[in-house]
Length: 309
Image 1: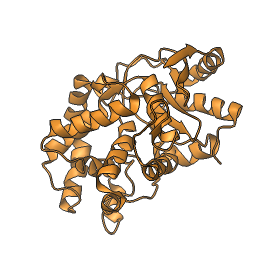
Image 2: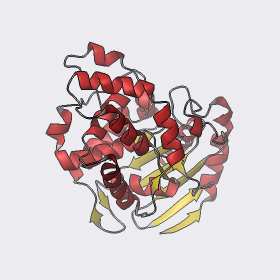
Image 3: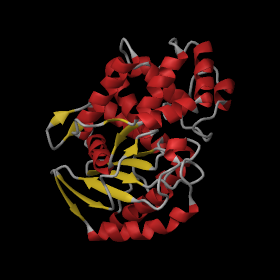
Image 4: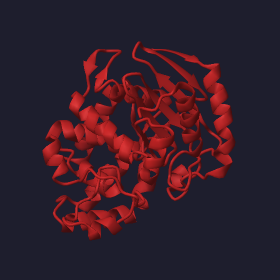
């Protein structure tokens, strides 16, 4: 892949960086708390194999909640939509991504969608395999193919930091187990989930994955189908309705691009039929999204009329 620095993108990065001071890094996960609040980088991957970038695009980040949309795609391929959506819903929620409140009031008590933590834990539970290691390797292989990077692995320090501070997610798991939505050992599921969130890559990898979603599941550079178009459609729909936590509606109105964020500061976006975007900006707003990353996407969407609406 030919990748070149783009001066116009660099100007957008410079402008968007001005808001980094208004956010904070995710220090509730100790290993993420050491990120540089001023970092901001972007890569855009096109179907013809070239890319443009600005900032330090090879600096690594962990997927965090971006992994939710990728694991969903893999589980949908393996199990089919009917089996998956029997256990997790399809509706957006205005609640925080780690809330338990709506689970208690829903009848039946299943998570509203796969992008909140409760729903993502159900999806991760559906990854088949004889051990945590085997299930993680299956997900890693899927991500490596999507990104066309065989070196992608997970950050053990971040995974341990998340595992040690996962009390709320453990609580969600016990609730889900009580209601027969999961039936495995809780510590095994938390082990797998925290390692899934700690999968480590860079902006270029994210942009390449976003490109696959943008092109309806086909890697246009290799010509290989990574997922059926119907699965890509489901995933992009969730990215629009639920991908930016409980700021998804505002994001859809202002920017209008299918996207998924993570509390490491990553954003993966897929502009349908055009290109994939990978962003890293660890300064987060109050809802857990990259504050400069959103500003950057807003500049791009307005300049190039990228909104799908």
